[in-house]
Length: 173
Image 1 (cartoon, rainbow, N blue to C red):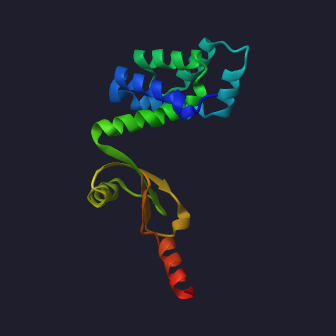
Image 2: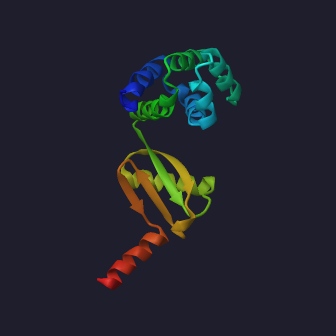
Image 3: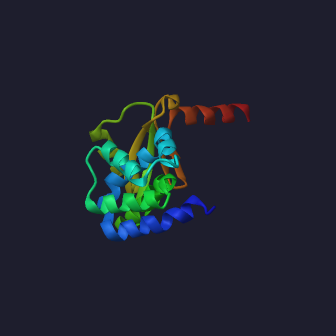
């Protein structure tokens, strides 16, 4: 069987051409639904019709689907590509970011980050990395304090945990 990324690429490109970057919100929601194991079992059942899977998924969406989204979801389900939805969403995000000249960044923090601090942090990180960033915050209490930022394959680690590791290496060397 072909690799998921190879399967997902034409879907992501077609959706990006048809719906533009507006599809990002509902596509992420569809991708989140597609990883649900119970939904996947239901969809993989030979007795389940594609219309039943479509109805279930659209019923679970919070904001509903526009016409282009409904057509896209029908095509994905009818072609048996539900498992590729998360990869389609990832490749769609990459296309959207390339168009906007932005990059996804994950900020790992030991504590909640309020919106004002996140806005300040965004400005500092954009200067540091030299590009526009779309920040996503994830809690990681084992960092003890500080933050760890991952942008593509670059990592900026200013956490207390990383500093303690550096001290440990320095003391044992």
